Image (tube, rainbow, N blue to C red):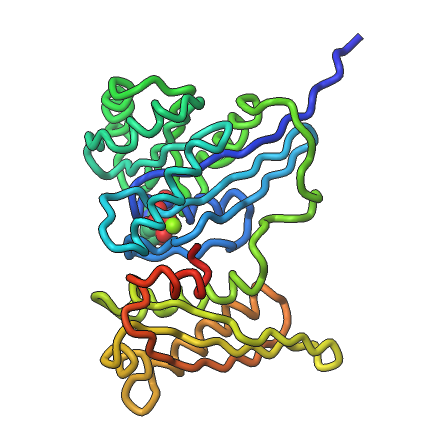
Length: 298
Ligand SMILES: Nc1nc2c(ncn2[C@@H]2O[C@H](COP(=O)(O)OP(=O)(O)O)[C@@H](O)[C@H]2O)c(=O)[nH]1
Ligand SMILES: [Mg+2]
């Protein structure tokens, strides 16, 4: 008689340096955009959960901010989120980039050792390198620490991601389905809305401007009769000069941010959206614990 297959579930942290593609991988895994991505480092500020359901497992992937040498209070908060994720989970995915030489910084390997969890090395962005470059890279990483497995992927194109998702459940303990099968994430829509606005700002502004931005959604009003949603959000910036940049000449910048963010939000919600944006100066909020808390970074 066939043995009854046990149900497995647990948490899997996606960790790595800034910009290696952690959030892109999470979106690919859940098949929908729940985490924003950008070519800039430190795009992700919070832990974001993405849920994979199979008949025999529920895998809870945790996207984390990049691990780096952080100085400002906001950056330290971000790195702490990633570090604690490593210690709280059942399995760790360490994401590295195929088109870079081996990461010899001991910061992450030390953290992985401390976590005592099985680690899968995920070599991302294989679309950027010729195939023959891959094996030497795998060999070099094998010398750094023991891995449960090494999986090359392209989070952007999708190659290897199914193989990765196939390997993870076997590493999880027996456990229940924590979330209903249709749920993809635990972050509220309001949060994703705020993030989508921040993503447009990351794409359109430079230097320290995008790093000093915090979005607060003040109104999220569903109108079932008109089948639309009205959203008002405040873009908090650190300095007066940033406000000028954010608004732009004759309001062009804020208009572009609003139009592009609205399209993304409409795609996610599946209804028409009316989006209102305001810019407010909150001097040096990234160094103030109180204001960080107010903006949801606590
Ligand atoms: N070519 C290529 N680019 C990728 C891949 N995965 C992510 N990226 C890009 O790398 C940048 C950083 O991605 P993101 O997911 O924000 O990285 P994170 O900081 O680790 O979360 C973005 O511009 C992505 O489009 C990949 O597999 N191939
Ligand atoms: Mg990210």
